[in-house]
Length: 298
Image (cartoon, rainbow, N blue to C red; front, side, top):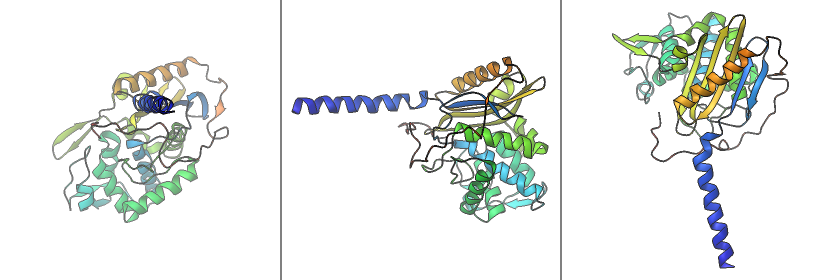
């Protein structure tokens, strides 16, 4: 009996090792036509995953909604709290009491993924980041994101904050359709703050023909995420890649998906993004995602 117990222990250990080393090799993805919502290709698009800084797409969507309702203006001034000033990188480096405009904060999120600016927006709009997260979740349900839970405005690690590739495609499409006047901010490549030029680290914007924008994200738990949009001719596509092992693999898969999408005819058949989705019950922690010891978190 002890021999079998030893065998089972060995197999369990090997299974744990496989899951740890292959967690980020799963790489959920989806590519859709931005206009019709037709799904051209997908793999594990409903697997729960940590969004990391893709979370800021919803932070910005809520901000755009507030602007459209005239509850904010681009020139509105906001004051950084102590909490905002203490956010980890990436950030603008705002000091407590420092004033920043809504427009500057929007570009700080879209260009350099500034965590401090995300908190400033959240607190200014809702009074606290916790209340803002509730607004984010309400908005997520309204646009059709059935399998997403937001817990903060930045995407910093929280075991209960999760999404899917499909839901991120839904959000990206909603931004383009509902707030086209702000879509250009996701293509911004540089931002000047306190005399310093801060450059976007989204390699997709620089390297893909027809690249229009959107967002990167990374934490140890999520791996390398990327929502990307591109237009060639009259066709605009949105791709979502989650959990790539390196920034290079993230860009490589995104490029492959978009190239395949643009090779299809404009009227290529596909399942509709929302109508044919599979809703997966949210777990306490996303399946397959494991923290990696010694990993640089941000």
